[in-house]
Figure 1 (cartoon, rainbow, N blue to C red):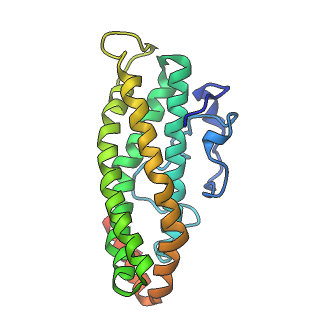
Figure 2: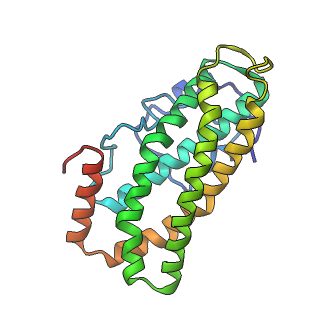
Figure 3: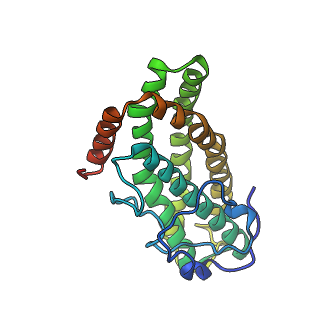
Length: 231
């Protein structure tokens, strides 16, 4: 799944100065070997509750879609980090920075996003959707559990990487890191693929069609409140 890349992680520092976030329909990082690997913190979601450019909790379904774009960016970064480590067989500051960015997003922002879906989106279809929509929600809830478990397995080697000094990954304390990180990262990315497609293509549009505007407004307020924001 992970493809080799032709440039170092540090080359990314000039890439994402724009505030626009790449849509899910754009090519995945794994499909573009010339895309730099690490995004500066100004371009990556920090996990801190902030209103992103072009998004508003007053339009909660648009915001959910923007969250998926940030999920995808973080998954792409994870894949490029793994490719970098496999090529270099060494840790450097760029690798540590990438590990910290991935940890920050999936420790803070991603769980809040899952709460948004389970509290506000799935119940709409479970109550008023058709059989296929209800089945999709049941599968998505189960996938959230799988994703959470996979993340717990992945975050340990990421924490180890974030604390490593510069140097080759062949010492007694770190020679196992790639062996642990590679399958955990590959599984984590794979679990998101169909999950995001189902939510974007079926569940979000169906729930938005069933939820009246006042209910969507209240949904946005509750989503913002969980992040310490007010609208």
